[in-house]
Amino acid sequence: MKRFDKSIFVTRPYLPSLEDFKSGLEEVWSNQWLTNNGPVLKRFQKELACYLGVPETNLALFNNGTLALELGYYALGLSGGEVITTPFTFVATSHALMRIGAKPVFADVDPETMCLSPEAAEKLITSRTKAIVPVHVYGNVCDVEGFARLGEKYGVKVIYDAAHAFGIFSRVERVERVERKSIGCFGDMSMFSFHPTKLFHSCEGGLLVFKDAALQEKLFNLRNFAIKGELECVDVGTNAKMNELQALMGIECLKKIDALLAYRQKIYDVYADAFAGCPEVKLVPYSQNKAYVPVLFRDFATRERVYTELQEKCNVFSRRYFYPLLTDFAPYAYGHGACPVAEALSSRVLTLPTYYGLPIEDVMAIAENVKEMIA
Ligand code: T4K
Image (tube, rainbow, N blue to C red; front, top):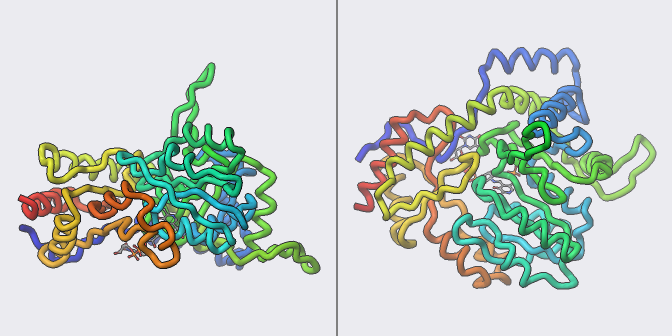
């Protein structure tokens, strides 16, 4: 079994060359403008619109994904209502609902994709339901057609937590050409997280993409305390502004996005080869951007043993995303036991290291270590 001299973490952020970042900093220095809708932020917004194929009027940047979600939920009027969502996610998906006074109602996930099941969600829709919040967990794409049908049938909003889904596109056939459509274009709104643990980042950051362009002014206002000029405050906003240094990091990382995605695919393929013919480790194959590499073990005990031995014997820090399940945490204990499929997945899943620059021979050695542990 190989023990690495240097710790290997589940992820590491991509960093642009210091030279490139420094030349961007010169612009910030000469502007002497650090936050509050600065010129670098505006450029980042324009470049994102171009990359995603979304009009610039239909997106808004924030200082992190959690506040982006919170303000998005608020702007869509979810306060005071029930929202059907998945427990198989990071706490932020539901925390942001709770913080605006909406109640998460937990429905079970699809056993294959691990994303919220439209059938399970539909059973919980009542007159109190204001929205459905599915999560493209790990970059596994939800049943977007299924949720579109529910949204239309019941007149509820569909908001995707797309924190893990940056870089995913679907191809749309037009009469004369094939266009790329970002996964963020489905539903009423989607949120991408730009945290450094994500494949693309801006140190911290979040992006909302929304269908109704009229929301942009509202969101820009809410992220800036909901003040208007010097004399007016129109709502209870907050400070959720992305600053110029974050935006600069985002611009530099965006230059590299194709390589970042390609490298993760390469890592995934190495894991897939290594685990082929090894039924004891089931590599989850659905991530379209390979944001994470989740594997399922036979049972809880095996997963726990592999997780611990990877740390203690190999100096490898895998993560049990997403265990415990949200409904095992105190604020959501009212949902405990409601989602048996999610519970079972959560007890068996482990996410293995993947990031730009992780040496391929290290990926092979991690996979061999895992196989040896369960042999
Ligand atoms: N929705 C979903 C579905 C999400 O997964 C998340 C965030 C959100 C919403 C909210 O978006 P943000 O508000 O975060 O934009 C991490 C992240 O903090 C969190 O962003 C992420 N999901 C969640 C799944 O994971 P931790 O506590 O596991 O992170 P941490 O600090 O243990 O980092 C993991 C590993 O990454 C470290 O062991 C080493 C490496 N690392 C981390 C950082 C921050 C680095 O090498 N450099 C770094 O700068 O939560």
